[in-house]
Length: 189
Image 1: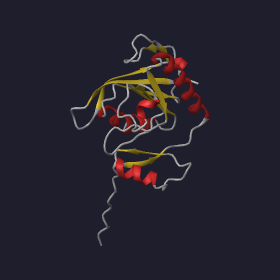
Image 2: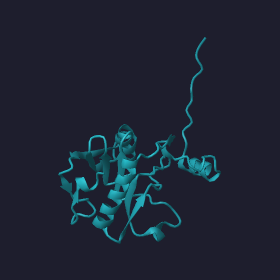
Image 3: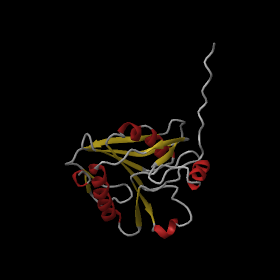
Image 4: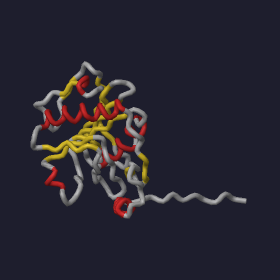
């Protein structure tokens, strides 16, 4: 007897938003839509939360008042993905996004402890495909910053053409704020 075939339902961003608006996710349930799949977000440990606070302060200083640092809020990137990155920097202020979430960012940052694999695969593809010019992974387990730049979007397998790993003693300037220097140690708890 043949095993029944399994069909996986892929969700669109519109369907996902309707599910959320209907209240089908619990009030404390954190999920995000990645490539048509509804993925649960793991609970944050204290180092993860502290790291978000450190990055927030650093990015606010680096980018200044003409940019908004959004923390764990939706980013509309394509019809089947609506990630909620730990941080992203978008031009303007909160009032510029009253009617819709941003569709791009100058930089996206994910803090990874147990999520390094997801952040290097799903999220790297999603952000590269969306043309996000710079993507950082703060790798808490290895105490480093992974920097991805120059998205390649012309192929089916979206990727970043440039990647580097920086240690706590290293520093860099964000592409969209080249006059600002960020030291990796300032981002780590």
